[in-house]
Image (cartoon, rainbow, N blue to C red; front, side, top):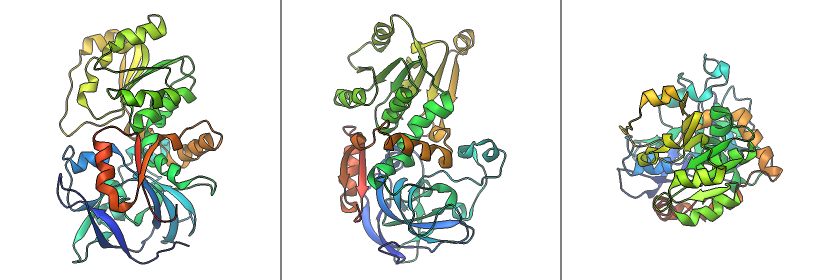
Amino acid sequence: MGKNQSNLVRAAVHRAVTEPASIETIKIASPGPEEVRVEVSACAICHSDLMYIDGGWSTTFPLVLGHEVSGRVIEIGENVSNVSVGSPVVVSLIRSCGKCRFCSKGQDVACQETVALDERSPLTDKDGETIFQGLNTGGFAEQVLVHCSQIVEIPEEMPLSAAALLGCGVLTGIGATRNTAEVSEGDVVVVIGCGGVGIGTVQGARLANAEVILAVDPESQKHEAVLSMGATHAANPKIDDVAQVLREATGGRLADYVFIATSSISALSGAINLLSPMGSLVLVGMPGDGATFTIDPGLLAANNQRILGSKMGTARLSVDIPALIEDYLSENLFLDSMISNTHPLDKINEALEEVRVGKVLRNVIVFNDI
């Protein structure tokens, strides 16, 4: 059972774009059918949270952000069979009906059906006004209320701080290599952007036995970390000729896959020139609203190259999260070393700023039980 089964919880509430969060006591609803209430143990900070806070993506305020959550189930609604009260779980933003044409093919991220939580937020402030649930989750709070499809039970031996990273960043990065691109042994891979998603992508390429994995990031202090987690080479695009570094690493060969694991639209500049014939440019990071880039379609067709979108790593939560936990428990997936800092909820603004300036891999907001 959870320590706090009250419907009053502390949460980091953002009330306007670019404004810092305020720690407020808010009310969270009890679960309806197919809904689960979770006491949050940890919530990792994703760059997507900053895209809303800083105005890169439009949203409705006030809201509680945070969507990489681990914790324990404290209450379940009717028709919930995948978890029980007391279960340790990972929570993700992916909601799916399990029955539509996309879900029936394992393409849960493309589900277009709606659930009750899509129609009303479970959060209200002290005056009874609605607080919106950022990215279907609202994890910068002591509790979350989510649809049962967003939850996967995890083993007791899985550390909850590390498990939080599986809710989005690592799931997205490794899923991009496994599910979207299907990287295989001997491939040459370039990963542009070495935050949490990028390092997840690097690890996915390593787990697929890619021959060369070139990690590209303008923050050189990240290179040591990414090399320790699977990259064979690293380059700083501000000072290195990335194409030359790639050719030197491969003996002249270009990349089978180039993954864009950053929201920076400038990362796409020249990325297609790193691709070999038959290669794929995989768009993992999501730029701000309205961002565009230019490409020569004739060259793309002539070289039999592809551009692939990869939302949340084309993940299937019930399949991919258990597989990632197995990788972690067998010491093949590095999660603990991805956590740069942990902060209590009261330090949410400082934690967000550390992510904003790009000096950390993953920051995690931790709560009392870990």
